[in-house]
Length: 240
Image (cartoon, rainbow, N blue to C red; front, top):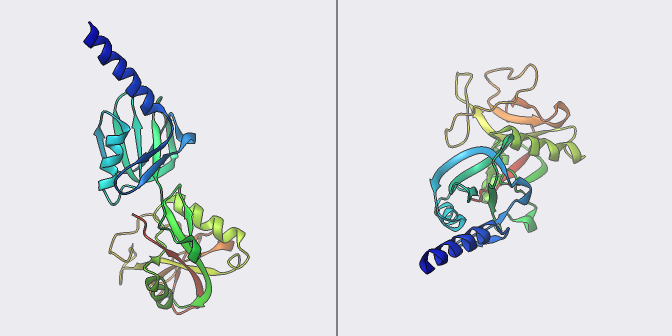
């Protein structure tokens, strides 16, 4: 009887501790709860799912996966989800679920980068007018790359920057992406097919325009560009 009571008491305490909003410490990073997302189920780019006794175990597993940038855990059913990115456009209720984001300290804000935690983007806007290849070289010199836009959420972040900065409201900026030769298909630098393509009306135009760019005055929608035009550009620093 005494042992049963102790076990029950330990279960209650463990459950209570699990529900306390806090940062979770680990071997490499910490995670902080996004309190505004509690009790919601948000779909995302799923890296892994598993059943764990506590959120700590979920975090430790996420910490071993380079592509895992956030996690959710529900102590009511012990289900843990690990994501590379959340998709805030698809939300349902899930009583008890909590969300945590890996804390980031490697987005070089002192060098002009900005961190957008909701899409895990660390980006820097350049108003220097250069060709596509010069833009690529500049990003590479900072151990970054042209920004990779692969979702509506990231596109929204991009446009929000372009729309409010007077340096970009009337000009193009280069983005990562190029047309596969002699096709209508597009790919990122690593050869991954680009499936999210928010083209502006009438775009893409011609097969000799093989690079991607965005225009703020067209709501940030995409254009195909020759690559020799002198535009601004956006670098992305990989965080995970």
